[in-house]
Length: 571
Image 1 (cartoon, rainbow, N blue to C red):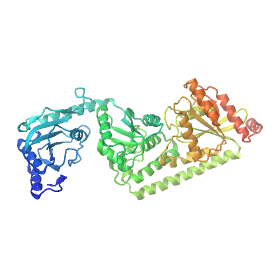
Image 2 (image 1 turned 180 degrees about the vertical axis):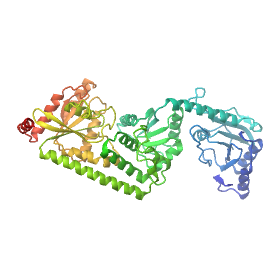
Image 3 (image 1 turned 90 degrees about the vertical axis):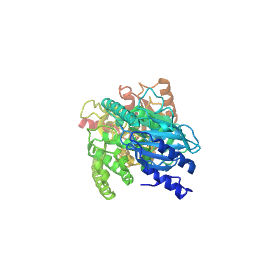
Image 4 (image 1 turned 90 degrees about the horizontal axis):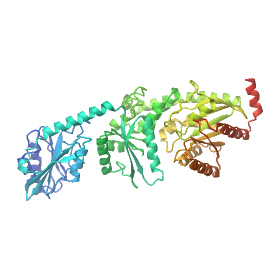
């Protein structure tokens, strides 16, 4: 390999030949360079009037020659694992003199080079040599991610023992990593939400944090990045990625979670630039669905959603796709980004994925038929259905338990302070004094901008709402974003053509809300035409008022209380 990389346009054959001869150079292993190599580089740099860079491995061999600065120099894939440096150091010239530039230090850090050195060129001769190497993560001695050594004259370039420095640094990195791994039981994540001018950007970042927590990650840092126009490849730009990589380096984070949906090429580019695992909000939600899926239907829906998400990203996606599943959906793993169809699915071609999707769709159609039979059975008995809807984590399952007195297993529905704790429609029998028997149905929590694949996969769950005679819209009144959540749920109901079903809004978690804010929220919703009832499902406060409001709504639908009283007596 004797190719000269970089900007070689306009160079003479003799100049190119002299640059190619740099591949024949050998220096003592473990050294930054040699006086002879420094002199040769300075002369060539002055001759071509450009920066010249050589990449040297730990055996002292020149692996790459570039006519470019450090940032543009041709570098191989230099990542050798989290606990090791790249195994290469970069020696290049500064034809106009000067110390190490920001680009030099950025390249050192992002490529995890053993070292980077710059030779000042003065009248075609080598001058001072500036060298820097990385510092261990969490270092309190240095303010930066690197340590810049005092400059030395070119004839002393081989005095610095780079091998000893690299060995000590890698040992310190590995020791710190072992200590952290011993005390770390889940992945540590950095969250990135891009603000393109939305009024609720901060709320979206907060919600992303809740999603990450629900998936099992520990959020160690979150950042709201303002970008009026997104960068095509990396969304946030190379400079911001460098900052995030530095944060991850010092906070021992191994995962970047973006609030915006990433294309396969974008995820690969960000992953290659940072060396971190990268997932987006869609993958995060899919992972949560996989963790919480219970029963045949939910598991089928999860796998179908994951395969549909995987299919367009199959070609050349590489390691990025392994974020979707490395354990085949095993409940034992429990960590973010480890559930899903499994790594063996990554090797499927599109035909086999299509076959699996067709099989899952057929299975779900059978499930839908059985669900339809149950619905028709309820219709024959003329039992009214009350659907419980609302933003995720608003308290829907807690309310269902409270209204049906289902405090013990197996009737009790899972109610947890997590997003998407309930993924399948759950129906329980209830009784309203003014009406009689009713069926109360809890549904999957709504969320704004639900990704396309989960929306399609769980559409059957959402369609269950269509059989409701009355909806109870549970709203977390203690949330600062309660009105935005109300609008998001209302918008989804409109999209499903369900906005004409009579609805009672239950302002839940009133015990946690500020009284003045609660009163203003109730007033605004009432003025907008909503029927509201203030409750606390957890403390079972004012549930009788909610039952009465629901019964009145059913009576307006034509359900006669006398019929149900007779049915209840006969039962």
